[in-house]
Image (cartoon, rainbow, N blue to C red; front, side, top):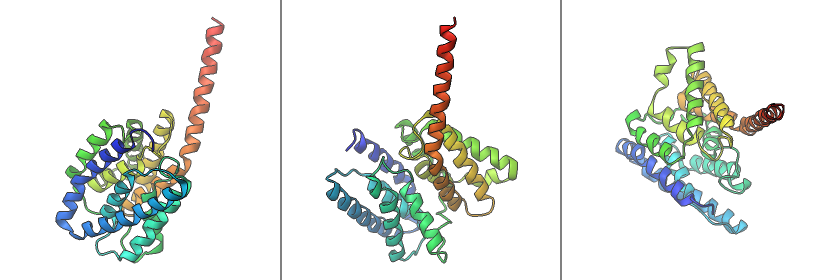
Length: 259
């Protein structure tokens, strides 16, 4: 178990409590979804931890909260079980657990569900008020769970592409659902890049794709698919950032040697 894992997971759980409480006041079934997802996710994590002789953290609770929050009301639990199993196993567990995966498992869960069960509104997401998400934004930034470089890139990508294709879209995008999805799915520190320049470029790419996809579909679905596409390119963006940094350091060293 890496140092700080428990602290990091607790910060994310606390950040999700206000939107969960608000949604519970509107839909009491969210508690049942949370319990079901938690049992399933921790079951998969326990199985893989036993096989690999690894420890377990609380990040399964974060994933369960996110799935319970974003899942449509009245969704069949057997569909939920398939989606969660697909996302958590193929998106995280088979790579060795959190920190070794390259895509966000909850985003993969909802992408799988949107393609597999088109009769359910998996792309819609809940209607969350922005005020319920602002405490999560503050807490994640303070604890370092949301990198400022990623958030800056997301804002730039969203604003830039929206200004190009549909300026009026920007006011429609500023919702609690968008902010929550961007904070926990797109800006997940485990899969959003390892270098400062790479994170910035990743954020611009993810934000731009989100604005592009949102022009012709639901905002939550746009975030999910934009996030997965951007995360596939995150290692390449980091590699480019390292090459640029190395070239600049070599140029600086030559300049210093030449006086």
